[in-house]
Image (cartoon, rainbow, N blue to C red):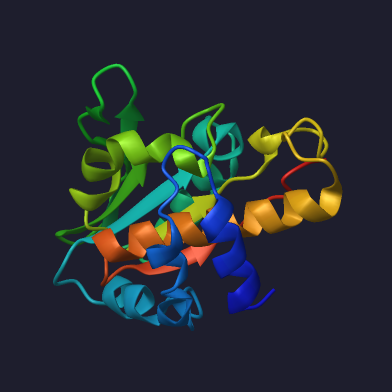
Length: 198
């Protein structure tokens, strides 16, 4: 949609957690963002450092049986020297629960899977807990998966039509990713966005 559109939207944004024009003006800084996850893949292959993977999203990523819970054991199977540990974000304590072992590895290094997805949320929901939920983790890879809770149609998302909803969704995701990247500049980011409405 181009920088001009993002900047125009930034000037009129009123959602809690909106970063405003300054963040949108840094759209150029997002060039190539999420274009690869090679740093994480290289790190997974060694047996020196632990690898942290953080998932942020809504119910389509937060519940047992959803894609992160299916994906992470498959990743561990590709790197059997690593033990897969899981930590789940606890909305009551605003912290991650103690780690549990999902799959034991043959080496001494870990894949730490931080399940930060929370049912019923949109990206703006995370701003209040961004320090503990994202910044304190300093993950190697962040997978972002939001969209459905903006509504089942444009009106349900509070927008007059689908085109406006598309622009608003793009702007909010861009701002969210910019904030995440600012807090975790070394992290690879993979955006697996949903349709903002069905």
